[in-house]
Length: 165
Length: 165
DNA sequence: CTTACACTGGTCGATATGACCAGTGGAACG
DNA sequence: CGTTCCACTGGTCATATCGACCAGTGTAAG
Image 1: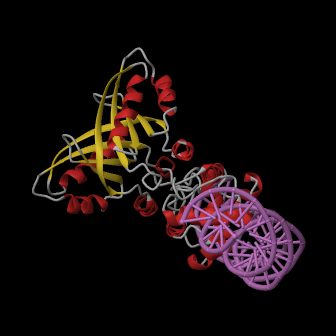
Image 2: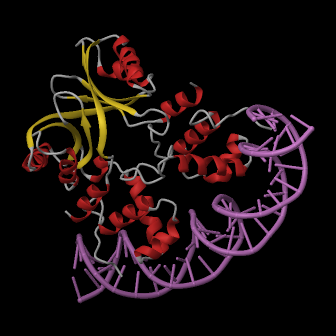
Image 3: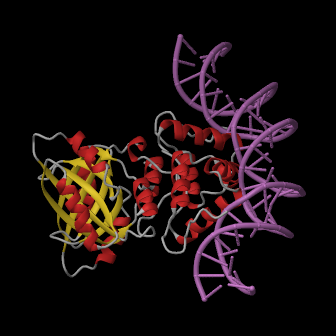
């Protein structure tokens, strides 16, 4: 009773999307309950999940930690200009040693790297930025503080889009 | 046999941190196995976990989806300048309708909003940005493309820092 | 037509879960 | 100094899920 899904061409199909959506909404329900709610056999859900994970679409099911609840309510995005001589790799390694640096990308444009940084207070944010600036090769740091999270990190709409489009 | 942990003052203590670390590394192991590895009773792990969740430190255990594996390998950060007249809230709602917008913050500085956007190709990125620009109230969009993810989104070092510091 | 594959629907034993409980030690407080 | 509160212990319990199997069947592609 194939429902016409073809998981070989598109990376996710409608069933995959519904499965991810379901897990996103209620992560604790388990395979059996998923199967019931999606109206398919349990083995099918199991196979789908395994494939999603092995294909890398679903990275993991680790705990999502909220920095604010941890005591780090200040978020900032810092753009770094680097001296040409210093490579991105060693720079990234130095940044990685600073726990408050949650994320870093190399980017196009005037800046060379874009980092997401958190801190306990604005004052401590300054400390963190100073620590970043202390790294060799950083010429300049431009900081914007995130005032509010208008859209929290999400992927669900994208999953649905990928399944249907 | 209290191990001297005081979870009332600091938001997380050493045991919490080890628990989160363990779950981050191997999300599938379950409460019992956690208890064994941490060398505490199972009930303790259960209580800690419940509290971490209820306190909001751990948001959830939902699947972490990788946009790249979904077919959206292009990431960009877009800074929006808005017309003063248009509020941030309605703007965020319009942005939320675009699946490729994964995240949006209001920020300080020249721009008003900073968004994380993904796309299948650079060409499609242009389409997405056009869709963003089509929203009423957007005066200007400045885009930087993420070339490489030097530090993937992480919170573990922060958790350890919060537990010790 | 034949092959390949996905899904079905059933069973199996092993294991984890979440709920209890009484007891104990430490820390804070009066 | 005694009391109270709280976290942790270590034990049991019934229930539910897990992950593994299996043969059978439909669709789709070659």
